[in-house]
Length: 250
Length: 259
Image 1 (spheres, rainbow over the protein chains, first blue to last red):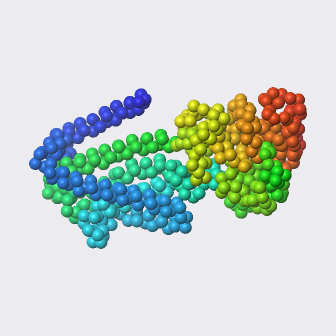
Image 2 (cartoon, rainbow over the protein chains, first blue to last red):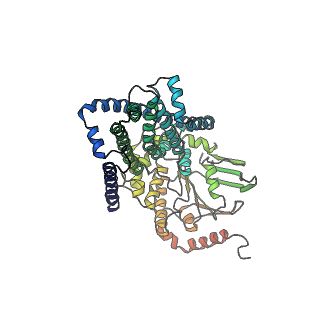
Image 3 (cartoon, rainbow over the protein chains, first blue to last red):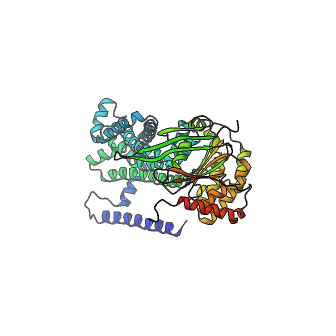
């Protein structure tokens, strides 16, 4: 580890500590009013044994939606990107279709999906649409990044279209796809939480909405904290993956 | 069969259509025949269209007029049957593969199983033994070019195309690479077309040096390089070599340069 990297790690640690201390202080002295509890109160609430099954059920439901949405969105986005890469005539149409779907705010889409599909299918669908968009955009641009000289080389060596895609375009696209993996994480969580607001039977999103409406401040903050920590942890994990892929492929 | 030309460039012209609707005449009425096993160097100032000729032979471009044939067939046929080897100025090694896998790449693209002994032989022929597992970015510019030449030769191609393969190297490494390439080529004697703007390089490596003028590109001189093979670096100190360097350098000077 270089000294620059360890320095930025230490600075990051200091930053996070300052943030957590500020949270605690603001809550303790009620600087932001009654709706800002100190961190210690939230953590105490979160670790109350009686509450664990509630959080467990909600988190399991939401994380399942996130996982399904993420995987389906990633696969869908990659498959569409490959189709647009391999079949030139469909490219403009696919680009536009994906852009149009993405341009519809998910808040507007959610009620529609609840009517069309079901309340429990809505969170993964919204999540998947957002993730799919990121993967599609990253993969289509990534698949086009191979240099002109590499393309010439493959042409002179008589490579088939399939070989060019497999041995040149896909490896060249991996760094962009790794970035999409990272950037999709918050999108997947937002999609799942928003999807749950519109009447899912369980989940962190539902917990957030009902806690807010019933003024259960520690419960609200706990649900938000679980979501944030999970999203950040996954984001950090995929950041690491992204760095490894970029070192390996470049 | 041996008197049949390996590469025939038959009164070829190439015009590029520019973005503003104008046309750029890159090559006019180029006529060039390369015999089997012959090493021809195309020498010319930058922008004279010498790389365009190589791209026509590599089936990367099509001629506007005239015809390019390799062994009587279209160049694309040779590509399709994986019998063309190429090395560019940009080494074009794949950064995610190690040297061994890069050199073995043509086998995969040809849908053949990798001949490991052949890959190993070529890696040691170009002086990279021990670097099989190194990644391109860990090697020097000269070593990367060696790897790209090994890759060009690995399928034992009928025709080898070299597009300024040492153009990005420093003078000392370049000369050393020329000596190496001469040695390697003497082992294989493949029909070779080398594009370069270095007079020394052309003369030292080739059997014949073809000089082109710039814009539009045409052939202005076609000289044999009558030095016995294998050629030692000392050839470059031969007075006859110097005379020819002078002649070729003079031919390269643009018309009206002194006006």
